[in-house]
Amino acid sequence: MHNSFIARGYPNNLSGVLNFGKEQWLEIYAPPLPGKRYQEIYDNISSSFSNVLPSMEKDTVVFYTAVSAYKLIYVSAMHCFAWASLKTLKEKGVKTVLDGNSRIEINDAIADAAPFRWLNKFHSQANMKLRLLEMIRTVRQNAGIRKSIAGLYPALGGQGTWITGNPAQSEVLAYLGGRNKDALCIRPAAFPGGSRSSLPQDVKSSVENFTDSFLDGIISKEPSLAELLDVSVRNAMKGVLLGIAADVLSHESRIRRWKRGELVVTPVGNISYRILAAAWRMSGGTITAASHGNSYLTILPSNSINNGALLLFDKYAVSSYGERVLTEFTRRYFKGPLTSDCEIVMGISQYHALFERLQAGTRPNRIRKIMVVGFPIDYHYYPSLIENNSHAYAHLTLRLMRVLRAHGYHVMYKAHPDTISETKGFFDSDADEIITENFTSCHDSADCLLYMQPYTTSFGFGMMTRIPVVVLNNTSSSYWHPEALELLKRRASFVNVDAGDDSALRFNAVELVAAVERSIELDDPEIVKRFALWEGA
Image (tube, rainbow, N blue to C red; front, side):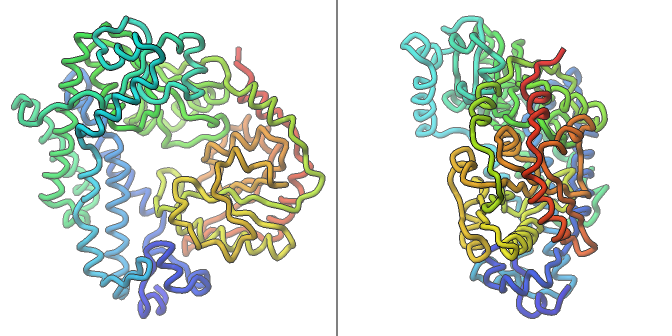
């Protein structure tokens, strides 16, 4: 650990970096723990979860409760890693951490990180105000008086198709086709939740035993976390899971009175939608998950087919040949204990009209303006993506933009929509423009799109345009389907990025500039035609 961090404090976020001094931070950047350590913690927490997860047949309520809360794996890993990082800073002599303009004593930062306060927000029942808002949304999503009434009183609905989430999402429309016109939209928060106090004692005991076994499993694999995962964490997590179990059973008893058909769910990560889906399936209905758009190009071992997200569902609806091929490939070659065996189905490709519209755009004949498509800067780490975290990518982005500007390019930084407030003011002095508007509204202002990483829905969109594309390829976590990679290289220029011993992401400046210039020669849309438009055999 550099003496400056020990003497002046360690920046805990980007505003803390500005307080510390961006230039010196660039020179001495070093995280307290490497990304590989996060992956170890995540893997141990994930395996602890899967080891104690009962089968659906053995304990239906605990299975659906736990699978509804599968994100406990991810957020627990994030919290444990952040706490372990602070402990490591203290061991290395750091006395304070910098959070914006605040200087926090390291012991206070550790103590503040210890309680799992996020558990209070992981799941909460809707209050009356939110329920009223959800009722209004139900009316808006169901055209006509008859459907609106059925949305509020589903027992009056027919045994057709139901949707929870966004009925206008293109992936939903691609799967349902003409059936979407008759689909009934329901919102789970419009209905009252269950009461923990009314849970049967055997259900309560089973949920509490699952929680204890889950946390005991983590501690057996990660003894250093015993201090963190104390009785207060156990009680808080039990409270969360008992609340979910109460909601699942409450919804299930209500749904049994409805004429259940197929329920289409999107997005699958929304906890209230998952609880409704669990109750729906427990009551004998079928459920289908709709995919997230523009993901027809990339593979991620820890994606929804493998991380527990799809264990609830009967079917997973994708909207292109590429999504189907890559999902099946991921399930086959990266299969784990939480991998879903749900049926993968494909509707009509949603991309034809979009591709035709984007291909009508002009192709730049020279690259002057480069849009750097930003990474979500929220200090998150990501399973399977070593060193894909906000500080590493902020450090990389600053150096990359400086190289590009030094070679005469006009650099536009496109802030990620999820973390616009976190990046405010951080990149201003290193970019010619900061763009915060929607990517689909501003992409054509650039002569070249440079993707900091390909795991973003805007990557699939950008590949459909005629704008030259450069993508950074992090070699420590590079996953490509062989057929897709071959076609990608005919449309986009690649620049390798490698994680050094200090966890900083390294690139070759000469190769970067050469990749930008080479990108203008790559205009073969076959990757889109094959993976996004073709509907397969």
